[in-house]
Amino acid sequence: MQLIEERGIEGTSMDAIAQLSGVSKATVYKHWKDKEALCIDVIGGLRAAPPEFRSGDARRDLIDFLGYLSQADKPDRLMKIWPKIIGYAIANPNFAHALQEHSFGPRRAQIARILAEGAERGEIPAGIDPGFAMDLLVGPIMHRRFAVGQVPAQFADQVVDAFLRGAYR
Image (tube, rainbow, N blue to C red; front, side, top):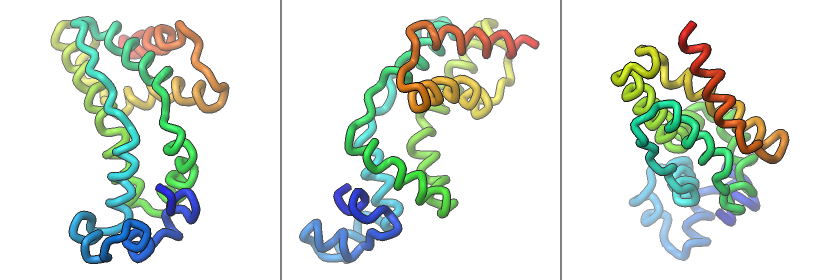
């Protein structure tokens, strides 16, 4: 964390990581294949997995999930390095893919589960692409969080209802 804050990922070497950690470089490589894998683990250690939403009602679960995302606190240390992480990801597609899977995979899996269970119960149409659903549902929430600074109380309801109206077209 300290090295990423100071130097960014591109300026952080395995030598520097080993030196700061007080271990040999071989020890670092024993646990991580490269600095990107180590960074993904560091990032993962700062974020809590979202709780499972399983009310038995797809609309309610989606609203609760988005409500959680709209209010979940991001650790200060993560927010401090996040621009450096994103900048590095833009220039390094393999890192971007690993970051996406690690950071957004659990969210995508939960949305996929909610959609599949809702389709089984006949609450929503079957066959909605979970990745596209995540873009449509999470995008407005993240935009409000980062561009506006807060998400209004009923915004998750509005996003889910707009999504569901579009799903039935």
